[in-house]
Amino acid sequence: MDKPNTTDAGTERDLEEAVRRALESYYRDGKPPWDTGVTPPELVALIEGHSERDGERDGEGNAAGNGRAHGAGDGGAENGRADGARDGGAGNGALPPGRALELGCGTGTGTNAVYLARHGWEVVAVDLVDRAIEEARVRADAAGVAVRLLQGDVTRLDELDAPGPYDLFFDLSCFCGIPPHRRDAYAAGLTRRAAPGSRLLMFGYGPGTLGDTFSGVTADELRARFEGWELVDVTPGTNPFPTFWFTLQAGNA
Ligand SMILES: C[S@@+](CC[C@H](N)C(=O)[O-])C[C@H]1O[C@@H](n2cnc3c(N)ncnc32)[C@H](O)[C@@H]1O
Image (cartoon, rainbow, N blue to C red; front, top):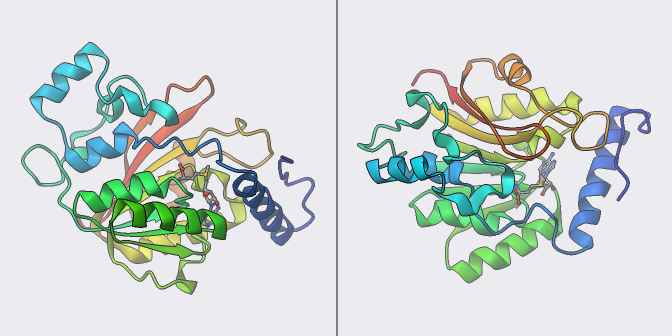
């Protein structure tokens, strides 16, 4: 698949179109490489919290270890995470169910949005590519859970029926591939829909890892773009190239 590059794309609109075509080709060609069928342990840790038994397993280095497809470190999200990032108010740090918005859900929403729905969350999941949404719908139906799936652009949420407010935003490798000129709009769209104290859990690739000229995300970028949010945790992934799990929290907690 050709990688879209800022140098190839004459205008910002051209770059958006090139990215869209590249994404569509992944779904047209079959199962995309990122669709692992595994809920990342970082999401599990945020939703379910941690028990003392989890801590023991972390010590053995195998807690939730089957979910490392997106580069979770040993011990999953536990490593270095500030207490504030995990303590959702429930006794063991579990996040009380509320409304969740998954950004760039892909077909993988059949795993992650379904996981959230099964844990009592009311889930809306958005992806740019129709085929991804169609397949995700088949999977959600097969799982027998209600997930609202919307085809659309996560940087143009006002065009979708997804007013929120949301208590949780989940982004597994979407923001890091969005053309830079659309990223402030992404942040603004989430900010407008954020319930006080809501979380954004994001996995992203570091700059220069995806073979094009614009992909990647850093902690500094998120601090700059997400005004009114606090970056409460950054946990490196274990891929052979830089990857990160970021947790942000909206203000007025
Ligand atoms: C690397 S894939 C990850 C998919 C899914 N989160 C997973 O882990 O299986 C990135 C996804 O984000 C979607 N995406 C990229 N830019 C988008 C945008 N502007 N609006 C909505 N979805 C977008 C792509 O279509 C793709 O499904």
